[in-house]
Image 1 (tube, rainbow, N blue to C red):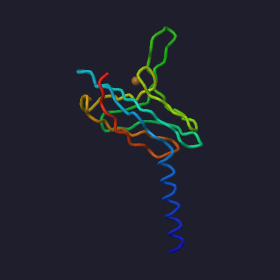
Image 2 (image 1 turned 90 degrees about the vertical axis):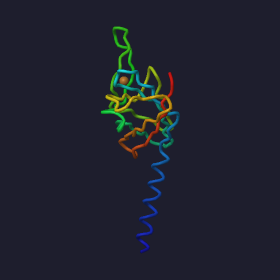
Image 3 (image 1 turned 120 degrees about the vertical axis):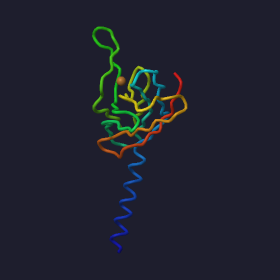
Image 4 (image 1 turned 180 degrees about the horizontal axis):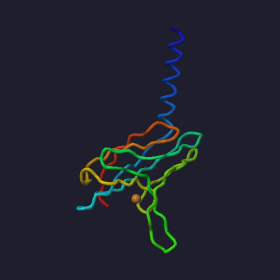
Amino acid sequence: MKQLVVCLALLLSSISAQAEQLSIDDAWVKPTIPGTENGAGYVVITNTSETSITLIGVTTEAARAAEVHQHIMSEDGMMRMRRVPELVIGPKETVTFQPGGYHVMFFGVKFPFKVGDEVAFQLQFADADALEVNAEVRPL
Ligand SMILES: [Cu+2]
C-alpha cells in the first residue's frame, strides 16, 4: 500500500511538471476566405522549462490536415511557405507565430472559419504532452 501511494505521488508530480513546461498565449486564427479551403492560425508558445522542447506537428478536427509552416524569402525574392517538421523551442524561449512568419496551416477546413468562432487544435511535442489550443477567429 505504501508503495502504491509513492507511485501515485510520483505520477501526479510528473503530470503537473509536464503541464507547466509550456504556456500558450494569444491563440487566434484568420477567417477563411469564402471559396477557399485553407486557413492559418497563430499562437505564442513559451517554454518555461530548463530544457529544449521540440514541436513536431499539429492535429485538428477542424481540417483535413494541419502543419507547422514558416514563410521564407526565396532566392527569386518571393515569399514562400515551407513546412517545419521540427521546431525546437529552447529553455525559457518564446516563439511567436504571426502573419509572415511561423503559422499553423490548415488544409481542407471542414467549416468556414468565421469571426467569433473557436477553432481547436493540438500541438504535438517530441518531449512533452500535447497541448490543446482553442483559438478565436479574429478579423484581419
Ligand atoms: Cu502555410
